[in-house]
Image 1: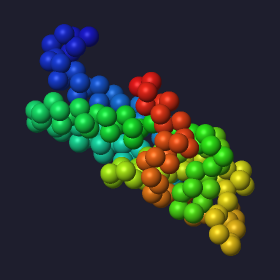
Image 2: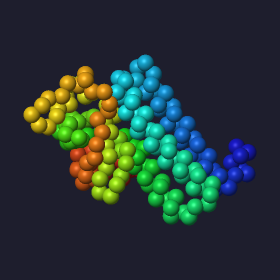
Image 3: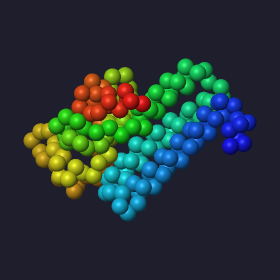
Length: 168
């Protein structure tokens, strides 16, 4: 309480980002608990949130160095987008020739122009993943999370992205 009275608005903002980092670490602790799901899911969450933590660190550094407000505002928007967990709302989302089925969680690792790098945050989709083409996929043989680039338009159309971003 005393810190809040003495701190400037910028210092309070920096403190709030440190708190955000703590919240993310708590989420990761839950995911890494014995009941947190498969090793693949744990790996996906680690990949997802390491990127978010890095972005928070960059924002804190810019705040400490008095970066222009518009630069910080742009990074805050990116943080909002990258820290959310989205759900597939259409019958599937095609990522790296693998169909991630409806109601599965996905995250955003990167945004480059009109492309979004997506990572599947679910547990192998209970055998419901399918690959496009002549081969099939054996979920038990996946060694890393499903990840790949999709168009922003496709991501917005096939997930709850628009609903989540609107309400933030």
